[in-house]
Length: 382
Image 1 (cartoon, one colour):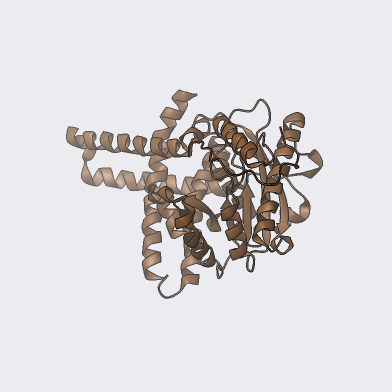
Image 2: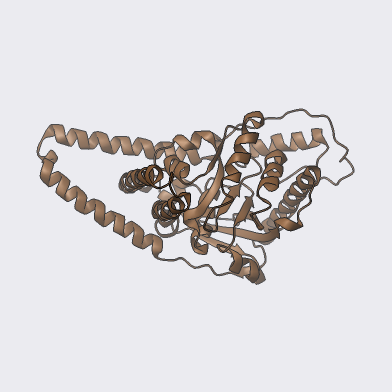
């Protein structure tokens, strides 16, 4: 499996990076030429361009890796998905939760307008980060003193967004690992909070600020709980490349933003209570290996991503044929050396992408002692 991933990374990386750079160039031209005169037109064009890029990653998940997402929700929520602005609030369980979100957005018809609150360093990733910048992702430095104004300004920019968008917010602030869980449990005991078993303690400042900013123009919160059934391989980018598929269960509950509390303290408490419920749901899932078959919805595996990848592959193969015919690079050792160097560079860039997705490379676990709050009467979850 590791050998397959190593072999696949070169052609897949070549396809993604070259097509991605073309998309980035078109996004830059659109940003500079259309946005100063019509932000609405720029957003509509960029949505199509971003979707052409993200569909390649969805193809990698769906068709190459053979991964499968099973959605558990009610029919009304399923019908609303993709037809309204929504804040997507999920636990951060695996390395590719963001990709699961893209798969759901693609099924709902809003992949090109799927946004997220991301760490600032993501913006500098070639192809990925550049496209996110043009698509108006919100980038934070993970310092509340610096991020408070940035978050509010970035969210306010979305008020006149012309198409339904999803804004993903991982309230835990980092990806789940056992080390981080131990730190979260220690923090919860110190702060007098319920002690989690399956999630981290949510960071409520950003959530409260987000709700206060978007409540007037975002009608829904999709409360998403992601779980991997027993016996399934870990959903990682390496396992996707190695074609070692997993089934991923996703439970979605819809909340109206109008129904949320009005005060900051009450909104923060609602967020904590939601994650307590997630923790219990993940306990139940671990015992039953399902979120309840009566709520299982069939979302299928559309062929659109497959067709887009075939289109890009044809364009690049034809382009490469004419390029090598014109330059005759393959006829000299110098030309062959240049091609090998480019392939090695692509392999290195793809390796950086993979490292960027891995949980053990994300924020280290930290514990900040706090003054115990008056919540000791609430039951612990462990």
